[in-house]
Amino acid sequence: MRNLRSGIAISLFMMLAACGHKAAPATTAPTGGTTEAAPAAVTLVSLTNGDRACYVAFKGADGEEKSQEGSFELCEGGQADASALIGKQVVFTTKVENVLAASCEGNMDCGKSDSVDVIQTITAAP
Image (cartoon, rainbow, N blue to C red; front, side, top):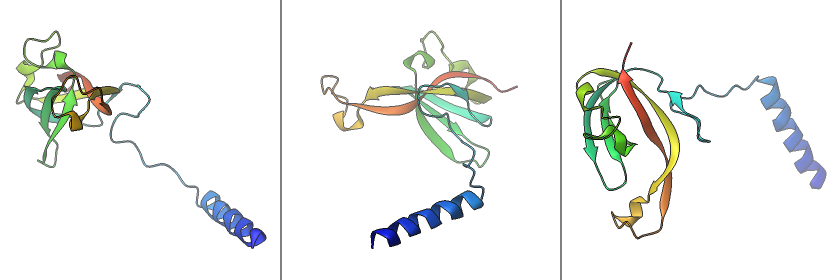
């Protein structure tokens, strides 16, 4: 039985190696704290200060509206205030950070956090 399992495992490994398996290209910033530009320009819809982040709403080329946590500095009045870019094509960078856990429901004393891609910068698209 042990030899059968080893043989199956080796066969699977060989099949994967023969296929020349390549990872799919990343569509968001990689984890590990690295900052990287978003893959394509999006239209900035709104910036809303929340309890765990500045929520950045944007529309992609497909017209679908999405929201993602951003640095508090991106909201109106912050050092990197991006409100002047609302309605314009933008690109952004992200970085994995810890934010107040969604399960805390806004309770700052909860003591829990979630690790998420947080938008760090928003700039006008070239």
